[in-house]
Amino acid sequence: MSSPNELFAALMAEASCSRSALARDIRDLAAARGLDVRCDHVDVGRWLNGMVPRGDKPALIAEALGRRLGRVVALSELGFTGGQPLTLALSFSESRDATIRTSRTLWTEDLRRSDFLRMAVSAGALTTPMARWLVSPPAEPPYRSRGPRRVGADDVAAVRATLQMFEALDHKFGGGHARSAAVQYLSDAVTPLLDASYTDAIGRDLFAVAAQFTYKTGAMAYDVGRHGLARRYFVQALNLAHASGDRPLGGKVLALMSHQANYLGEYQEAVDLARAAALGAAGRATPRVRAMYAAMEARALASIGDERSCLRAMQQAQAAFSQEAEDGEPDWIGYFDQAELQDELAHCFTTLRAPREAQQHAQLALGESSDLHPRSRQRSITDFREQARTILTVAS
Image (tube, rainbow, N blue to C red; front, side):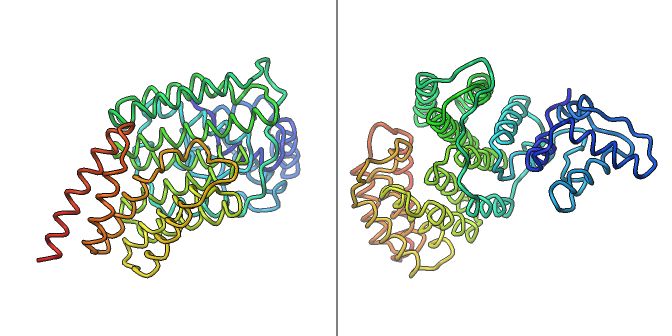
C-alpha cells in the first residue's frame, strides 16, 4: 500500500508548481529531447500519492522542478524510493500545506509501525532544520477557505483539553502508557481540522496546539527510548509552531531537542539547540520561557565542562524567572515552576561536581515540587539520591 510522497509534494509547493504545469513541463522537456513521454495531471497525482514513475520520467521531473527553483534537483530529493523516504519529518518547511501533508504521513506511518521509524537519528540531522527555522521569514497567515468544515474556537479548545488529558496520563504513568492513543487522535481528529477552513486567528491557535500535541507525543517516544522517532516528532512540531507564527513555541521545541541531545551525550549539539531557541525567540519570549531556554543551555554547558559559561547561564535562568510577564505566560510553560528550575540547577551543579550547591538546589526542588506531577516528584527524589551518592564520592 503506497503512502503520500511528502518530499515530492514539498518540492512542488516550493516551486509553486501545479500538477498540470509540471506535466506540461515534462512533456516539453521530453519533446525537446526526442523522447516519447506521455504525462498529464493524473500521473502527477499518482506520484504524489506514492506511485514511482518509470523510465525517463524521474530525471525529467527533477529537471523540470530544478528549472522552476533555479537550482539542481537531485533524484534523491524526489522521494521516489518505493516507500517512505528515510528523511520523513526531518526537514524544515516554510510551506504550510507541506507541513500538513508531512504531519499526516508521519502519524500514519507511526500507526503502521513502519520499520524505518525505528532508525536512529543523530543530533547532526537537526542542524539544518534548526538553521532554517532561525533564518525563516514570518509565516504567512494560516487563513484557509478550502474544505466544507469550518473550524471554530470550540474545536481548538477540544484539542487542547485532549492534550491536557494525555499530559496527565504521561505524568502519572509514563510516555509508553497512552502514546499510541495520542498518535491515533492526531491522525483521526487533528488532521481533518488542519485540512479544514478557518480564520487567521483560529488557524494560528490550531497550529499552535497541534505543535504542542506533536511535541508531547514526541516526548512520550523519548520517554520510552525511541529517540529517532522522537526527533521526527520534534522537527514536525517545529514546522507546526512556525506555521502558527509563535516563535517562542518553536524555541520550546528546540529546547526539547537540546534536552534529548544532552541526555544522549551529544553535548555540543545540545548547547547549539538551546542557544538557537533563545536567539530565534529573542524579543518575543516571556521571562519564564527565557528562563527555560537558559536552563537548557546551562545543562548542556555543564556536560561539556564549561563551568564559567554554565554559571552565567544559570544566573540568566534565575534572573529571568524572577521577572513578571506583562501579559502573562503561555500555558505550555506552566510546568516550568520553581521546583523545575531548582531541579535543573541541581543537575547542573551535580555535573560540575559541586556537592554543596547540588544538595542545596535539590532540596529546594523537593520542597517546591507539586503533587500535580507525581512522576516528576519521584524523579526528583531519585535524582536527589543519586546526587547524594555523588556528593559522598566527591567528598571522599
